[in-house]
Image 1 (cartoon, rainbow, N blue to C red):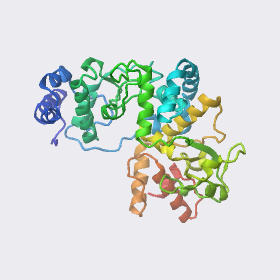
Image 2 (cartoon, rainbow, N blue to C red):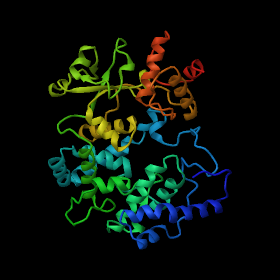
Image 3 (tube, rainbow, N blue to C red):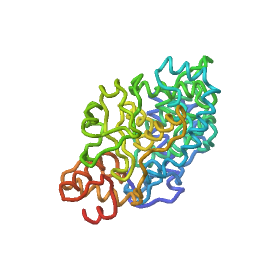
Image 4 (cartoon, helix red, strand yellow):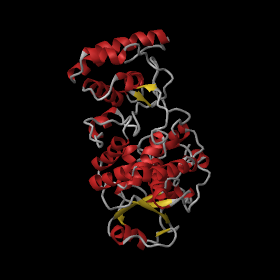
Length: 395
């Protein structure tokens, strides 16, 4: 929708109700949703103007100055909650040993990986998830920066209710519209939720077996490779450029080792891993730990499109299985720039021919390696991470 001037909250409410009836309802009906289900879902619902990433009527989307998602903040601080996830995971590993064994047998996903995701997403089901999913999803479908994505999600949520998979009252979500203990968006629920406890219906709100089984099924459906690790912390010598990072620049792990990359602690890479493909990961560039990761790392990333999220899950799973050990590498003081500053830096790199993965203010692997490549070509030491000096140099 296009508006010529900012509207009052009352005007937005009026436009929202018109959008529900004239725009969303025909699509919901075409997907088999009854009028009774539609009306029950949206009874009393108004747009929630406090949600992030909204585009108010009459305004254009712009990169926010600050970043509200922890996944894209300072890398080191992201791992602060890991102790609670690993201790909670270990305590539940014995409690749910039978379920975890069944999951590993059926899906090939290690139980500690499923536990780490469960703990990270909902505190093992203890986190309060207070939002009305239809309020969140419809608000974002009506006026967010990603309308089409949330439009699919609100339709999927209606389909869930129509099929009797959940009642409108049970549809509580995060601020991003994610549901239940594994924090599935509605499309993920329809595609990946399973009934592991055998009661006839997948229940990600109250059933631990269904929650853990659904997490494992999600990973398998995105290509989890049975028998492979997620990755290894490594030492990267100065002779190996940090600009070699990325899932599109893989080579056999034995080849990385031949370049001088070694596991921290001195252990060799397992023989079956050395023969397989691996990828360089340096989430803070030269200012933090480095890793050789496997395709399973990028499967974990499908759960949440963040390198730090996937790294948190892999590291937490290792700690659940083998004890609490921190990374050998230390996180430097990086990540303090405003998101808008990073976006400006990305636009400047784009103008000189670099693919930064989009000027969204988030320093993903394409941005990190583009920075490293630019630094090397301009006689600078490659750090592969944005900083204030770099922002100034590229003005």
